[in-house]
Image (tube, rainbow, N blue to C red; front, top):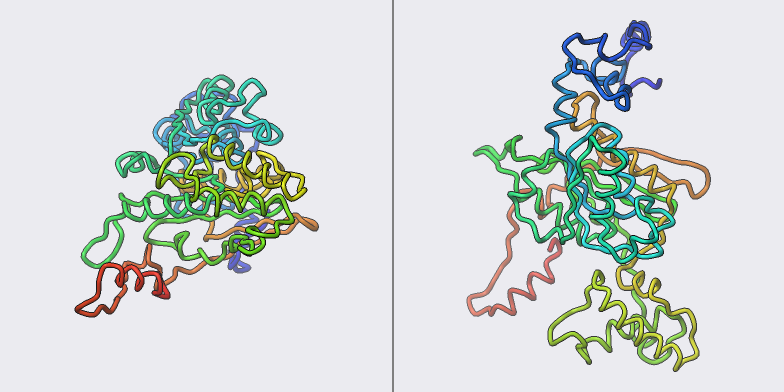
Length: 399
């Protein structure tokens, strides 16, 4: 077992020389007061009910901690896709019995190669509901509550009810919204220190092909998602002259319908924009893009490609999802148990060429608009209009 960074020679010798007793001792023999446990969770009981070389120095094994994880701790999983399915499975098998999952999406045929909680007869049904039904049936001791809604449909009182929130999203917009919601829930004292009872830890996982990352965010204390917003790659944009006059790729035809044809025809009513999560919107764009592609002799416009272009989706890899979800579930266990030091605070994984991983501490941005609690000054003239204020906000370097 690797030693923690920073351990000196004496500490290393002491750790290596510790006697942890017989590895075959059951959890019930470790603590006479511990309740009888399902054999499925014997390994988890052994972790919690005995000290270890990597546990915190102030950690004290007790059966109450196991009871908290199994019966009190409420975990919210945001997203029931590739990462969400892995997270539900991992957390349920870790002993968390009160899980909640939010996902407004429905199951598509293309999901079945990696989202293993779904079957062919689930196509068209709610991801959240099907995933919950699968876990509830396979692991009766765990209760998964599904919500087939948007995350914006819930208020602060809803999110306050959870001990930990873990995200497996494919949208930067949704991540930023969740980050802002959890930051808005933090209360501060007169000295600017956050009230620990109002802080809800956020574990965020993301994958992109053979690459992935995990972030551990303690709102108001560590760097938030907005502090590292520059790490996200810029969106791919096509030249307007190309998509309008000389399209060469199926993506150009899809962008033409989205950017130029949609505002002109307003197929679903005046002022209604493109909703990447609405199958009717995607189908309409796909149909019009196919017509334009035929006009220019272009092949390859499909519903799946249309969805990918509209939502800027990068194909997912099942093995990457498994690795990142395992890391996220481990962080949830660390936060819930306080046995081990949590990730501080950014983990990277890359198996494009071999396997590479690293972790580092991303520092808080002192100018972050979301978590710095620092007001930003905007100079206005006496005769400025509301439009002048809007223009100033757009041009502000930090806004």
